Image (cartoon, rainbow, N blue to C red; front, side):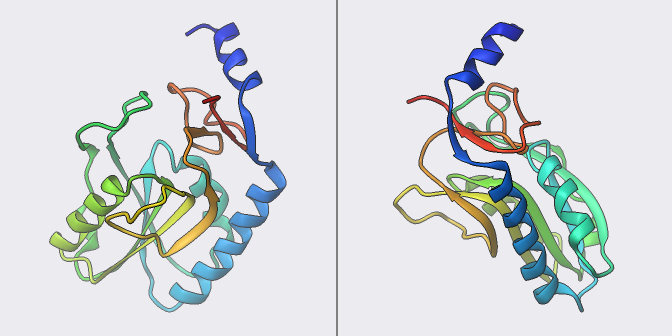
Length: 180
């Protein structure tokens, strides 16, 4: 895809969540997470690359000590359809006996987040919490529900604020949806 095609992708997209709503949702989430985890000294794991933007906005608002790390697991690989789970950067062993907060960009089908939770519990995590910026409204049960949710988005392919469309536009301060 070239620059002109990338711009057309954005120009033709529908705005789903404006930047001011994104900002206020992150602030609300930080308050909820702080209330719940302030006495826990958790390991906070950001799911790269989608959660990088969300995590960067969230971490400075958490007012408790934490240990930070990253994991990388994907089903999409710059595509719009999920496939098999692939671990590029698995969790470290510092999760054993610890409370872990997984920070991710979106809860779509729930398969990836459920796999992350299961792996962390297998590694001996005491408790696994999850915070997602966006929860996609699919209209059916998912294998996992996030403990902390910023916004709910429609069942469309969304991008911006860390989420990508064909590997592009993670840098947007708002959330958009591809045209159906």
